Length: 449
Image 1 (cartoon, rainbow, N blue to C red):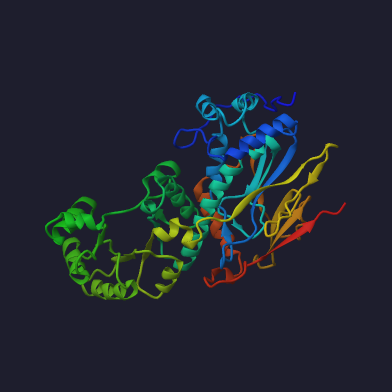
Image 2 (cartoon, rainbow, N blue to C red; image 1 turned 45 degrees about the horizontal axis):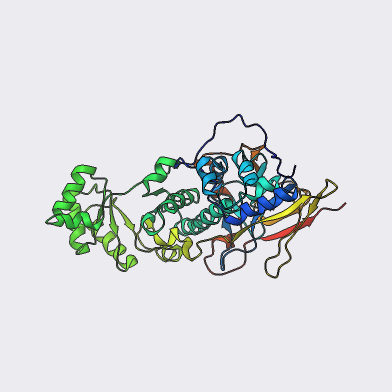
């Protein structure tokens, strides 16, 4: 009975992704051919532990940020092979495998770092415990979500740290794939961005949105005054007027003349932003608009934001650099089998030994070692058994799925607060934008028998 299903009965309704579709085909061909061969060999049902981790941080980064957890849980629930998905696999796998897939429901356990948490090299960001067949099928989907969203959140965290108390607005939708734009807006919000321009992110995830007008709106009208008047009449004096379509100084004068000293904000989208911001601030103050804010945009990254720290800027709009991970569009995560059931029924650690691609065998447990002041000292990863807590350490792996049922879903406000707290407990070196080593070391502790 090599092809016998390991499925259990499933009384739960089939959830779907926000787009209303199955996620089952968001995978690679070889996941299914491995499944077919394992079913035929009788090894598909072996208990297995897979681990999602990164061997290193992107060059120069001091820490990474976990994001995409909530999206991954939605995707696991929607990983179903209906008639359409099975028809698409005709010629990819054999009939017994298709029959097995028809009743696929992930029934194992998933543990992971909670959304917004900080991670380091070899942090066991996700641990999947199930049969080989159930767990291997999730590899590509989980890597796709975690690699993208964590890359965006990691860049966003550096940007919000550089911005300090000044808000950052995510506005990169037009610079990436339309679905990646929604995920990027969500990840940026987890890492401290105040809002996004993306309405799908608002609808799906409750991310606050903002926005007023572009240069085209000004160009639509015969004069800049007419454009400003139309916007103020419709949106109120608290709106943000774009003042660099023609001449900045004249536009600022017209903006205050139109809206009055209660004008909400002006936006600068070109030129030497530091110099312009100071000139505009002086002019606004002279015109009595002392509370009118200045928002700057135009290919900002964490370095540009840091360079504007002394400028009279009140907020940053970030697009291209955010949605491309500020030069590092992937986190470099991998998904590896680290333990599996042996012929005697006991779990056996397994590992990859390839040059530069080493994995460490054994089920992992992790905690953040803190000193008496609550400052992080190390990432301590236990192999086989949890590392010993010395009294004030913080356990990092939390239950996300238990017996196939999602138990770790939470709102984005909780993830945002977690990230704020996790970043705050890192040593001060984490705030440096210069190239350097991870801010704390990862230490592995081997179980002794």
